[in-house]
Length: 185
Image 1 (cartoon, rainbow, N blue to C red):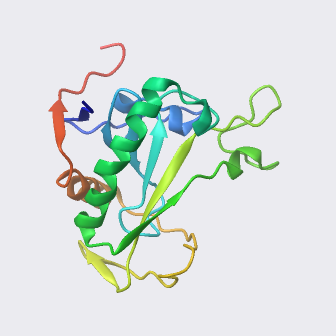
Image 2 (cartoon, rainbow, N blue to C red):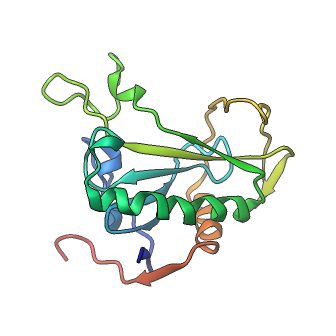
Image 3 (tube, rainbow, N blue to C red):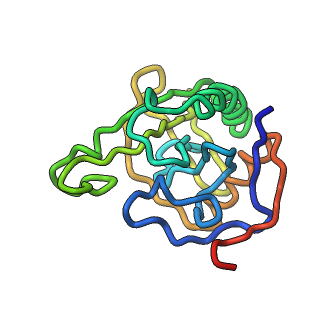
């Protein structure tokens, strides 16, 4: 059975400089929850309220490269996260994106090239969509392309607001809370 976990104390970093998706849960300040093989983090760009990243904890380039245990967790985890995101802020729907484009950019690839070659990390973006303006904690989001493919923008939020969004999403998930133990402690 899938065990979704989070820490009783929120992680504070640092992010892995070679691959942000490889940052392990005890270090990931954007962590919502994790399983043995995946983590769900709040996307640092909240151009849609509740936008999250669903990433493998192992650096693997493609979803088709997941091992059997990762494949066995992928769909059940998605089945928990999708309705939680819809419920957290009353999103009408979610868009699921699987993109590896940035790993192949010639300028500022993300993650950085390894040995001169693209180094993608398999992850998905889950983007809640809203047909109406949505307000949360004094901030307002307007989905100007609802019903069409999502258009990415740039929305940076202060840490306390990001933590409030994480708490709202967590409230919709069956999470077991455990103590935070950072590596080396």
